[in-house]
Length: 199
Image (cartoon, rainbow, N blue to C red; front, side, top):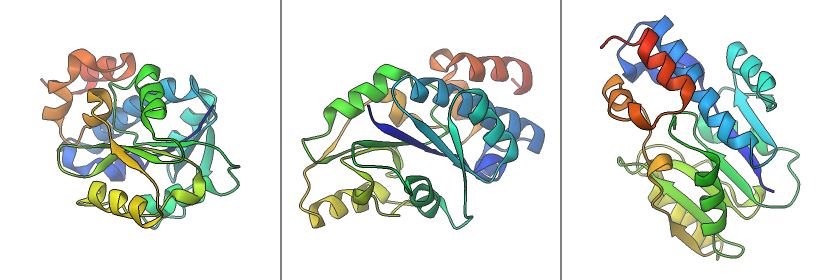
């Protein structure tokens, strides 16, 4: 079974939602909860976060919180990987409210032997990674990161594939994204959308 890393920036990571801070917090935590429900079903899960409520939710859902050192997503993932033993690792963003365990199993299975599989977002960033081990990770997030992760794999001599998994490709940056995905979202996000998000 893989180790799963979920970086969660908290409310500060969702400013593009264009909503009040309380709504952004509710949406962010609801999405994290749905992502964690999928992750803990397939392997030991670590949530790297500076957010106290996010850490509490991780514990509640049987994941392990790890302190985010506060220097961006890549450094956060590196912190969460510290001490992870040999074996396959999945890195899954916290804003993928449609993901279910079968999506993560498909990502795990799609990785070439000893290689890397990634799921690219519509904007060219990277939503999820399957790595052969923690040593294969590099902090390459940001605009165009899918290309950089692909180049990184090639530089390591590893095979890499880009996998088309809609529930992992569809991330949430805006309230319009959330509304567009509403029918596919997990139960926590659907409830939040119904209760806290303006129509």
